[in-house]
Amino acid sequence: MMRTSLLFVSRSCQAVHRLQPNTFFSPMSALSRHQRITVLRNSSTHSCEADRSYYITTPIFYVNASPHLGHLYSAVTADCVHRYKLLQGFNSKFTTGTDEHGLKIQQAAEAAGKDPLTFCTDVSERFKHLFNSCNISYTDYIRTSEQRHQQAVKHFWSVLCDKGLIYKGSYEGWYSTQDESFLTALQVENALDSSGKEIKVSLESGHKVEWMKEENYMFRLSAFRSQLLDWLRGNPRAVQPEPFYHAVLRWLQEDLPDLSVSRQRSRLQWGIPVPGDAEQTIYVWLDALVNYLTVAGYPDKHDQWWNVVHHVVGKDILKFHAIYWPAFLLGAGLPLPQVIYVHSHWTVGGKKMSKSVGNVVDPLERSQMFTTDGMRYFLLRQGVPESDCDYTDNKVIKLLNAELADSLGGLLNRCTAPALNPAQVYPFFCPQSFPREQEGRAVVEDYNMLDAVRSLPAVVELHYESMHAYKALEAIAACVRKTNGFVQRHAPWKLDRRDSEDQRWLDTIIHVSLECLRTYGTLLQPIVPGISNKLLSRLGVRPGERRWADVNFLPRYQGMDCPFEGRALGSDCGVLFRRLESPNLDKQKPKKTKTKISK
Ligand code: ME8
Image (spheres, rainbow, N blue to C red):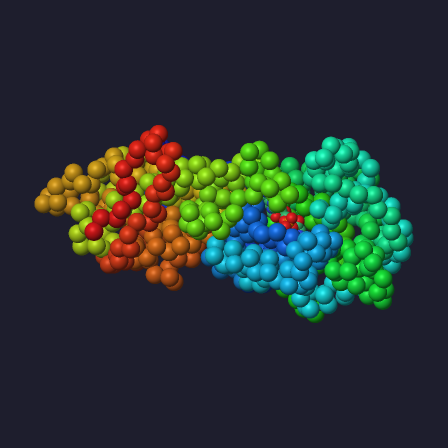
């Protein structure tokens, strides 16, 4: 099926098809040369058994407050890729969890009047509950307060120490407890606090910083600048999307002082003690970053996963992941991450959604209002990794009503309605009605639609691979519109069923439409697993027929058998996605409900 043909052109150029009657149309031809190379490179790894492991992580989240929509976005982004890799037959590991040590958490527990572990357990459970409710299919959930993690961190520290990369020094400089980050004089600015008092804040996050002077252990970060530059220059896709890669290169041109990697125990008790020095606690970022190794099985047997690790992070923590973390790994003699995928922020009223600003959107509440799949779809359809995105409920309602309820749900409803399909079977395709040459009843737009849907899996694959789900969804939504246009154009409900030719054409229209829907349902599984399951079940597609390799769109058009032809449809489980109501929106533009699947 994936045989590529340089002779493939769109259906509007009929001459080529006449000259090459047996040429399959090729999904690859819809892609640019660069895109084709990427897809081929990725598909070539599919055939190599040794390369079939994949490991993806989210940041581990601070437990100083409840999860918000931004946290869910990171988790959904990683979950989408994990599910996609599973569909492709990979053995995929996907981890998330909570970051529980450090001054910020110690202070939050104190303020709540709870002992730190009880406090952390409570909030960590809230993250877990959110992720479980939103179908985040993590394979491991790590908490940094766990024993397995403490052992991994201590081991990692000892390796760095043994290599002479950690020394005792005196740190003097700015520290932001909110960001758990050390800052140079150039990274802070003057500001006024709420009472009008002059304070210093981080230029990047705006969080308050304090001057600190302590005896600490220091890591020889400055020694790694050229190795980090070599790594990045040799791996231009190590940090994606590209603007973030360039940001890291720019940071590496700036001052790169050694990094303080411990705090005095007298100030910070809630953390892992430095091995061999009970007076010092390991810096929370070193502790937290090692979580990715802990889950991989470090220090005993981590190679299988560590060689294929991919990180998803927000842009706020890029420096920690693209500079500190690779430097620690280089120091410990471990491979560097394959890719660090960076995404931008959700804002509300133009300000980054964050606990400290107080403009957070509760993801659990919203997924109850708009459904879990609805929220997953919205976040991945609207979230653009390269730029911040402002959240409003109205945007959610408009998007989900248009694309899930009306467009996709409407298409399924029309094509499975007993009025058009009284036998409730996957109807037969008639090659004479829709011949490869344009001689039947199909028109140029129909052939164009077939080309678009045929190339869709390769397009979607490319975008899933580069963590641009929004582009994949844009392409799917465009195809759904084309299929709706196809049905509308040929109005199968107007055909005369007593006429055998009309009946064959009607069956063919429905067959083609169901093949489109089967393709969309299969490709959408990583984004909206519940809706996809409902859609595929309604079409009678069995669980073992939903892998990426099963898509094989419209085999009958190429003279091959279609396993679904003549098969009973699944039972009607009602609307695919119920239209969401908003008093404001409905007042502006009343709409009739289209998505009810007729009985
Ligand atoms: O930084 N929009 O934890 P954290 C999108 N524990 N994503 C957002 C977001 C927003 N408005 N706000 C947060 C930490 N995020 C450390 C990480 S990893 C070894 C340690 C997401 O609770 C985004 O992924 O502050 C961001 O990087 C992360 O949550 C920060 O979560």
